[in-house]
Length: 342
Image 1: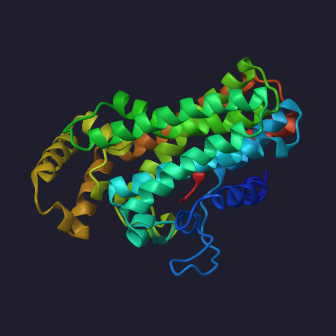
Image 2: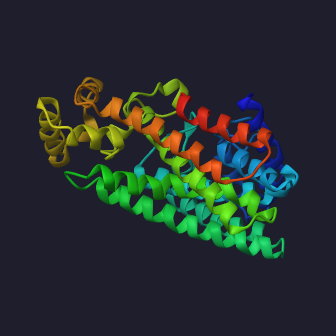
């Protein structure tokens, strides 16, 4: 199965509608949003930037085919989900202090924090407009699922921030946070096209279960990349999650494992939380923390958790009657999530 073709189909179908939605924004928000999506550079010149992996649009248009509808039926859902996703990225980059995304300076770094907040808010509002202007019963059902997923996403971000200021977070708490922050929107993407195509709630719920567990697998891989990912591939700094003191799965699992490396890691991270020099730590100091996380088993545990969540996601598809071709494509997208490098 050519996953790149699936991703490109979602991107190709969604992008014209996405750009038309962004064009509705008042200046300078339209320009700021266009920069964020990679359509222009910081000077306003046309660009062909990295627009992200496009997993969510691919899932949305694919889910429409579960019902026998054309993939185009899922396009408003794909665009709505992509708008919510990018609303969260704009705000997350500011809250986390991230200066790089997709190999470019983030919006708040180029255009300022105020524009990052306003454009994020505008994208969130546009997401609901894109669905509700369809004026159908199915659009109303899809909007309800999107708003529920959006609230869960925001809950997850709030949990993520609060955990940064705690010495310890349980594995269960971390999984709950990641299920909200990442799983909820991927669950919505996996079902929203089917809802627009007239699927009943039982079908949509099963597709959401697939997407939720796919989201947990997706985030587990993201957590691995956030510590050990190649900056050339990820577009972020080395050890980016460690720089932000994130209580990601590898860190939490390592702290919960017991043993000398786990104890030593706990002592170091507790001291880091009180350090005024943390922002000026050397590459070697972050590398040493990453090595302790790996020695304590956090890296391998997280990789295994990604595989486990992938299995649960695939099993959720058993409850849905769909064409074999569509099932194979859902499986291929799930496989892609756990083997990606960025």
